[in-house]
Structure formats: C-alpha cells, structure tokens
Length: 481
Image 1 (tube, rainbow, N blue to C red):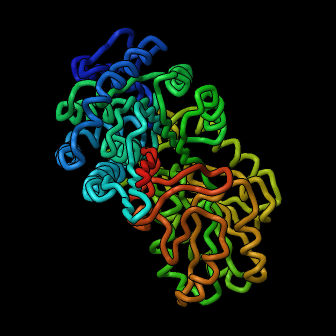
Image 2 (cartoon, rainbow, N blue to C red):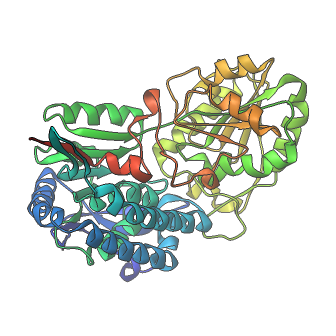
C-alpha cells in the first residue's frame, strides 16, 4: 500500500469532519501495515461534540416518530450497502475473517430495521380516562446520549445503541474503540448525511476521552459495551450527575451438555459459538460441562473438529479465524495458555498455521482445548476472550447447574439435549440474561429477545422494546376532573 491508499479518519462534530493530530492504526495480522490514520481526540473535542448534539436535540425530539423511523430505515440501507467496500477495511482493523465482518454489517442492518418497525407504536402514550381523572403516560427522550463501543463487532454493537437512541428522539455522541475506528466512522459519516447536523457525532480517543464524555454534564444517558473494569469507571464518572446507564459487559458463558445429546449435531452448532472471532465475543461459549460418562467420546470428537481449523489473515479465504486484535489481548491470552500448560490440566494445541513464515508479524494464536480440568481452575473461572476453551466433566445435573451459576458473570448460557422440555427445565434455573437450547452463537440471537446480562455482566437490556425503554423517560400527566 502507498500513503494515498491510507484513509484519514477524523471526528464527526455537528456534521463536519475534524482532523487535527493523527495516529496510525495497524493491521493485527500484518503489523507492518498501516490501515488508517485516525484523529486523536481531547476533552475539548468531546465538549464540542456534546454541545453540537445538545443544540440538535430540540429539533430532533420534535421530529415525528414516523419520520425518525423513515430516516433510520434509510440509514439501514446505507449499512446494508456499505459491507461490500468497508468489510475488508474492518478485517484489517479488528483481525476477523471476511464473513465475520460482513455478518457485522448484516446484523447492524437488521437492528436498524427492527427498531424502526417498533418505534411508532412504542411512542404512543398509554392513557386512562375515567370519571375521576385523565392520565397520560408518555415516553420522552432523555437528551444527549453517549455511546462507547468495543472493537470486536463494532457495527452491530454501535447500532444496538444508535438505533434506539435516535428512534426515540435522542441525539448521540459515539466513541469508537481505538482498535477499530476507521470503517465504523466512515459508515457513520455516510449515515449522518441523512440526518440533521449534530444528531449523530463521533469523537475518537482513549480512556481520557471516554471519561470526558461520560462525565459531561450535558450527557443524560450512557450506553457502554466492554469490560467490567472499564464499566466501573463509567459508573463512577456518571455518578456526579446521576446519569442513566446501560452496560453490556463480559461473560464466561457455560454450555451444559446433557447425557442424551447428539454429539455431532451439537458440535455443528456449538463450535460456531466457541471460535468465531477467535473467541473474542462477549457471549461466546467459554466453558463446556460434559457428563463424565460421555466425556471421553465428546472430547475426542470436539478435538477432531478443532484440529481442522486453519489460522491466518482474515482476508485469506482459506482460514477459519484470524489473529487476536491487539497486543494487550494477545498477552492476556498467551499468559492464560502458559499458566494452563503449567497446571495439572491437559492443554492441547490444535489446528494449523496458514502462513507460518509471517506468523510473528501478527497476534496469531492457534486454537486450544483444555481437557481433564477442574471447574475451579483459572481457565474455567476467567473470561478467556481468545481461542481456548476448557472441557469439564460433571457427575450430575445439579453439579453442572451449580458450576454454571458459580461466578461473577451472567451474560449467556446454553443447554444441549435432544429433549427440548428437559433443556427448558434446566435453562430456567440458569443465572443468565439469555439461555439458549441447542444453539449458542450469532445464529442464536433473535431481535425479539432482550439482550443483556445479570450479576456483573451488565445493567439494562438491548434489542426490541426493552432496548427502546432504556433511552426514554416516562412522563406521567394527570388531570383531576
């Protein structure tokens, strides 16, 4: 690539692109390659963006729900058409494979379309009229929304905040992840062309920019997807002005295999939820509980499948998954692998390298499976967020359930069985925001289902009317007759 091929990505403030100082974004699969140059944000940029959103709020809130829905549907068309040229750029930022990036655009499109279909009915007041009084309960927008999104699936995770925020009449300031800001910002700039200036704004930066955004006095709502440690800082920074928050955080999702499972059929679906995006998905399968009497057969079949994976750059059509996204994540995962290797468990390194000669020029990690491991081991208790998963033997269903519910996380879970009613009975006892039966991956998601976590996996819900409710206040009006 030559310098002319490298896009320069600025902030989007009040409908204008603002550049300033720039920093380089490198390809996590080819660390020598510069993918984009992105603006370096500051508290001053945040203030300008928030004030632009605040200035646009009054006009946008007065736009009818029908007109807002129409514009969001037009934005959905923009997202649907952008995958062709932006998905390869996204691959070179976040390290995924091409189909994963294309899926990101597809899921983002679906979120916008589904939200637009709901907002008119959602916005109608609930009214009561009797001999004593007239009551109208009305849903009104909160104001300026701050959204902070991660790098792993930036398009759909952005739309999960943008769609309900804008549909209900709020304006938005979004901070992309510094590890995958380019394709997303280009997309948002195209979408912003459909909207009044200031309704949609983007500011780039690190944690200091995020802190300036979440603590800004004109921001009334924060939507955040990311890790628990950062979420605690978000809560602290919003406390001074008592902002409403929605937090979609990490998970250590259990998959409970029952003794009647069809192993081959289960693995066809389960493995999509383990290694997709190199395991870097909040609700990926991260620990698998298997009946002791079935353990050897299940583990052998599981490892045979995983050993067929090929790891390499995401634009190579022959690879199964790509590198980890960044150096810190690479060090975290490889440290966990090293600790597991030195434990009593059996660590298996599987799969193959697509291009071994360039392996050290990226954050590549082969898939790993941990066998003969205790539930209490770090690999079982920590969120790996990488291509490594433990297989844990259990003696009875109650033990599996207790272990599944053990810990600070509660985002997703799954039960694998040929008996749906048996699966449902067990699912109802699992502490999670979502529990799936015989599925646990992107294909498990349905926009009619609220998405979010319990315990330290989050606050609030996204998708559907539950997601819309996060972005409004209920204003009760009563006329006493």
